[in-house]
Image (cartoon, rainbow, N blue to C red):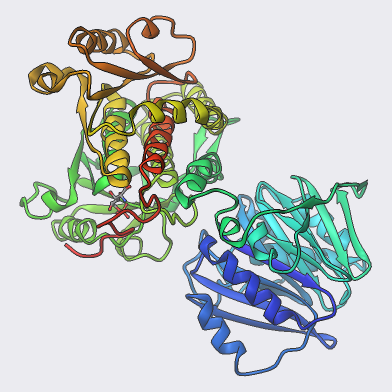
Length: 609
Ligand code: AGP
């Protein structure tokens, strides 16, 4: 996820662009840059790392241009570097972009065949060359952007300037947000409202497959065929603090709601439903290497370890290879029995967790092939691994991991399918069915999010509890662990996740009317067993909060409270069951007045042992 901004007006653009980028820096901080129309040319300044590095460059000069664009980057294609930093230029055209272009390689080959040369690894530079190559035919910038947008597959929100058209900025969007700010004789593009709230509260929202032309005379919105579209002005009433969180009270809640987008962006470009295929060439491991593997180790900490546990069910069932899931701080000191015939997967949001990094180095030393499933391009783990599958969840600011967790599960599911195909265990028809279930998940997560009020109601009943027990079976067992971790780390209530079948071996002694028991009772192969566990709790006067599958009329006879989730296959059910547990933890923590985004004693990335 990146942040883009554009300005056209009467004042020098640099201070306005920088002020806006400061509000967008939470969207990405790998690099930043600005571009201006200056006289009859262009001025571009870019810097790796935090925005302050760009500010230091700009402080050394006075740029007076009054039309410009800016960008803060969260790397998805190409490591964080000045060459890969936006804005990207081709001839007289400059582009800033938020999104992922799936067909950028085929477009790049086509443009290179025309003799064009590229200086970056990014998909965005391809957009700049595509627009420039079309504009060279003499059409206005608006038309060139329109034609180029029609050739892009994937997600984009772009703002484009051209020194040959100094009096306009053209923007377009598909799958990534883009808002327009309305001033007096000055107009703005931005990825979201915080970037322009210091300048105007009057905004227009662009929808997918729409574009806009900003000039000092005003704004024109059209569809991709050039038909004018009228759009009502929205008056934004947020205060600046709320705006940083996109109107949500906490980053954690915002990120819980970003999960459909995070899952979509993690899927994007990696599957084809038409052909029933999965594309993970990015890992850089050949089919022969995969077929020679004897065992997979998934090693991680905290929430990432829970994702690994769910991944075990997916990979063993679909790919038929043994998977061992380990806590990194245990793996690294155990003298692990891992070697050249094994695959080690480091599962990590930050890519900087010391225990996970050390475990990966230990595995590498013992000859294993090591890959990472990671959310941060250019992080230490991702740089040292032999291959990486990135979760495209964007920056996760809340200490409690939410959107990255479901993005990790998404990546593991795609990996399991990829491996199953390479080991010739699944035909195209079966793969198509599994992919159809996957692409439906973002919509189903949206439906889970719509039940927020029901979850908040449950939270109001139990936020004073001192202990919780979370139970699950099969692929939902790791979700019981994750639900318990979410609750304990932000509300400070003691909570334990347990395999439901283990309750009779001890935890059942804890059951009484004071300890809520959350049971993941999705309709899967062990549903009847879970139902009997619910009865066991009820029989001892316990309180059951069940997370069940829509249409289940049985569970309500035993559970005190029921939260419903849509139906899906049993391997994807964890992605849906997680959402009500995230919301339950969030609402309980808020009701207890806890610091949701920065809980006591915790850090977002534990870079020490
Ligand atoms: C998750 O909510 C916690 N913040 C924590 O357990 C986290 O998952 C763990 O520290 C691992 O971090 P990583 O994914 O960045 O390696």
